[in-house]
Length: 349
Image (cartoon, rainbow, N blue to C red; front, side, top):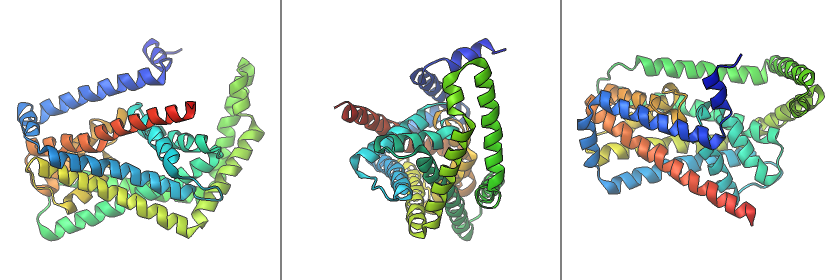
């Protein structure tokens, strides 16, 4: 039996769910400000250098564009993908991923659909490319964050970073596990998908829900799984594609670190690039939250990271974290929204 509140929420349209999610994100942000200094944090933000904030915002947008280019390289098989249409499609998918609750969890499926639909690509091909890109993103985050922390260790004393080290270790375990599943234990994934889809198919058939039954028809699911793994092998076996994808993923993380450094500079708070290179990827990994864009979790993680490795006060770190999120999330969401509108206008012509 469905819980009334939950069932009512799931029947809402995506736009309504996104609106609710963003409202909750703003509410969580207000609580965060109140807990970390309240008026002192807000006063610090009013003194931010607008010009440097603009630089940080450009870096935040550049990071997303770099990740879009990373995915384009992973998709670059027999059919050329690119141009303005691809970038608008990617940013549109990123918009949905950023504003929907649980968007970070379902982001791979959202992005895969967004970039394959305008180019008549197989969804499985897009999902395979996104899988490789996401895995490289995870490995790059761990690597760059570790390098940044190592550089900080060489320069000065470092505070308590056990939470971040635990998160990095967990992320590394996840990365190794995913690689093992798709390379050494692929049959486990195939059996799991077949069993789950079989249960859904039989349930939908008994209930007479034909669209769902058709989507999970066993033979169709088997062909799609084979197509997905075939596309995954094609991407993974092309070392040049993997290297190019990994390079743009790393550039994206470094752009986020530059955005964090710029946010600190705009507020007169010293955030060395090495510290930002540790905090930005690590916060992205450990600051998980079901709210849009990981709201709440990332702000807390960035604040804790800056206090630990940059030696700044909680109030200053919180102000930097908020400004960093303005540059790397809220501005990006605005750009994504414009891209989604442009793509819709182009497709209706």
